[in-house]
Image (cartoon, rainbow, N blue to C red; front, side, top):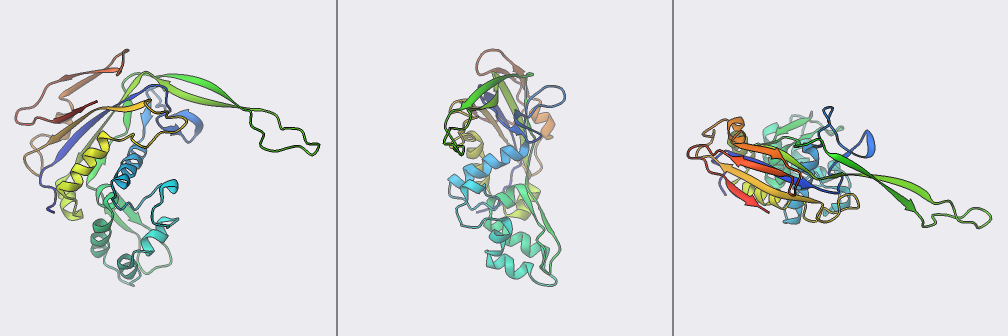
Length: 281
């Protein structure tokens, strides 16, 4: 399998209707909203979904979600130390950062794609950082989304009082975005792909993961059908450094908010000799 030889740029357009696409940790239960009122799905959230999709494809993932652990390791340190090649090199008094990079990138697709820091204490090595070959922006909504509040009552008894009575019903709130489209952009860079051992086959797996981003991702705040990948634009350049700067490629798409499903419209102005592969739902 040869390393990636052609820079790749991509754009993903996501429709959201009746879902909380990415909760705000500072305001539990509320969607992420920027200061200007537009909605946001963080790049960390998108990378989590990509990792999950790659894991569904049978790939080895270093940063696994707690409820999707497939190797029995309950922490990143345990997973790393369970890999003997890593443990042997990292435990040396003068460990070789390049050797650590090579063995971890070879084993875990998310390490060679997104990068990783190995900061574990109690070993001979200092922290080792690896730069990923893929850069990804947060997904930002095209409009200032309408956020609906839903009241939910817990009617099931959790416990009984000392005299046997049921505890009181509890009122919960959910907040969901309606009729909005989000857009994210990214690139995969050949220079870092080459040093990380990221291959053409890896790129195709990322492409498939973006198209199927919300498969096997439903929850109470993301009901089935409430979040969908509407389009994926995938530009593959004819050289390592790319025929055009990424921003020039992205600006070939004039994406506007619309009131009707799928809540956006696109005017395409393709560049000479750079035609994207386009997935349309």
